[in-house]
Length: 365
Image 1: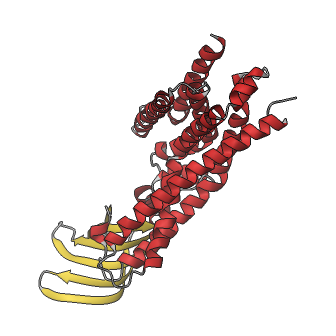
Image 2: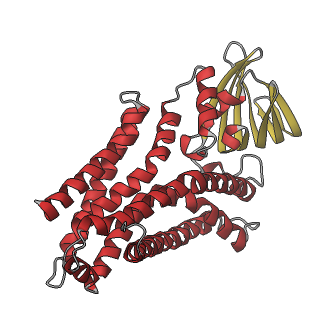
Image 3: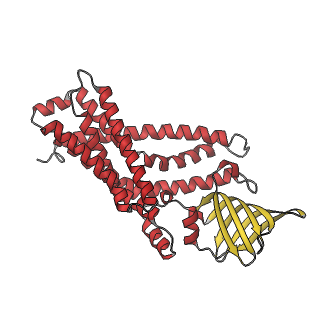
């Protein structure tokens, strides 16, 4: 009977899933607390910021941060699982019954693949939607006045040339991949590039042929400030162009990435970042399986006489090196020095082969 379907295999799989979800939940709580404290610090001077709103904003921001840590959750979860099985002598009894290390690992590998598929097709779209919702809540918290909250965000910049001259737009935050902007400051120049005025606005929406700004305050050199409810500025930008300027591949869900890639290609923009993100999500189940293989290579042994610290350091070190490799390949891909497919799948192959060869040497070498 296959180890994936018999009672012992289901037991090993359940122990691994419980350990992985426990690590996932622990890191989630830690990130929420840290992010909540940071948000409380930022909103301490805002009378309209309630504790519940700040907590919800932090709660909606964290899932996307945690998505990047999912491989490490699998690594630590697998190490915790096998260490617990070894301490309770369950691995020793299983080995005495003639079960090999490959049979120990196969249930966890199957579970990691299933978790990776769920993370790609369900968790990623959910985290992207929650991130957009958190941006909207941040805009409500920091955007109570024209230009409000600019100092609290890194900002986005956009330059456009119209028949009337040049307009430089700075937005504190973007929503819907740049279609809606909040916390705006505009610098308008005439055709001869002479400064005309500075404009602050609470929000702006991209509509057909123009930007529509709301809650506007205009500052000119030779007149006092003027407040307006709305201001329309013509633009030749399309939604695809704006998304390429304001959105990041991480904020686009897995199911929307193919359409974004086609849209960017038809508009003549670089698609390396979107393609890399798409292939990283496709490779995510196999990356989680590679993490399980790495964990098994350092933790499938008897720890009665010590060696736990060495096991932990070895596993964490291997995971850190794999993370560095993934960042290097990601930067090379974004610089168009490496194909996105190679950049996404190389860490998977390196991690999986390293764990496989190490486990093969320990068991059969």
